[in-house]
Length: 300
Image 1 (cartoon, helix red, strand yellow):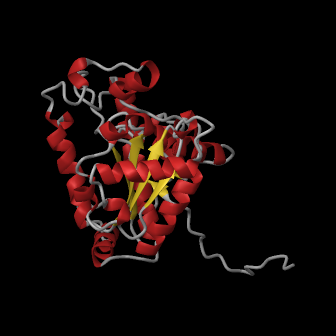
Image 2: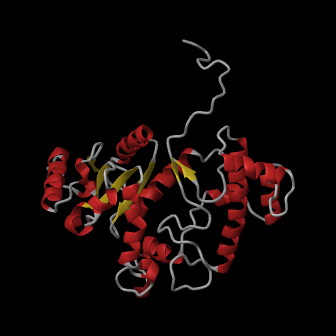
Image 3: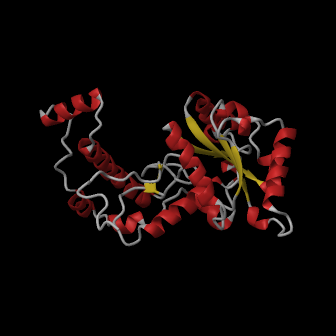
């Protein structure tokens, strides 16, 4: 056996995939953080909001430094770099900034902050107490950002993108949790239908039988996008983690083949936040002995 099969090759190995979030975005619901109105999505108390603003500054500098170190630059990147090097007003050079020193100056402990998932007040109530203010419930509020029409507007552009779509449904509220517009949203993209709460199925019900039932129900509901090339049905439990690794390996394989991103969609309470939080928790456990980057950007 070779002691060092890669020799002196220092080519960076590609990470499995990355969950893309940011310091100013709630990782549970996707709302932008704000500290002005408790009755709107994304609310954080002022002190927590201020911390996230500081993390955003560090995150922007980190992103710029990573771009500077990258071998793949667009023409716009080259122009931006030349402007920063020439000291043009409004174009600060971030390449020489020491992130750790800047964090200390801001009073931030990046390692401690990276261990925490910051979510908005609405999502905190849902996750910890199962409650949410009536005027923050989709379908019960006049808040435009929580309207069904707004959700449709957010999802419909996926049909024009190359993407892999994980559609989460609740096995115990199947017809109520399948997105009626799923075929339109997906377009020709592969759809992996993840049937959540499989851990609650009776032991006598085999998984092949359960998957076949899911397919028959989809046919009855006239949802045909899982027939797209690469489409599949997977039984999972976002709470226990059952089936998640196989689900993500399937999605990652398709995403690498198509060179695209993975999107998770689903109705309210289907398990989207639980899935994302499970992935984030698994990632945190795998990195507990190392330093993690600031903000809420995490790798699986």
